[in-house]
Length: 75
Figure 1 (cartoon, rainbow, N blue to C red):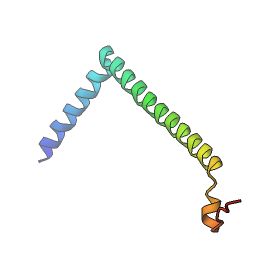
Figure 2: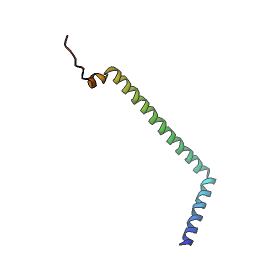
Figure 3: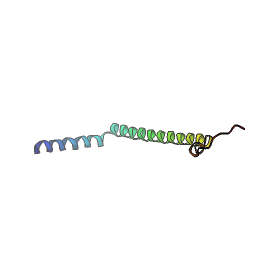
Figure 4: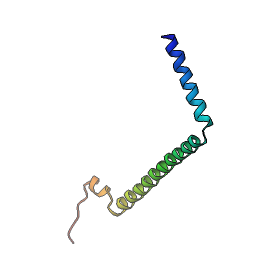
């Protein structure tokens, strides 16, 4: 059991060493990080646009009329 743990640790260290030395893997990691950042940025933009639309709609159709029970009158 202890021997398997030692071998597993050696494999992990070797993989880390190879990853640290590989320029291709560094480039791929940078691309992945950029993609995550772009995805997060896109989500933030979408959220901002959604909030702006909700704000516009709520200003155009005030909810307070519905909540206070005010009724329309035909004049």
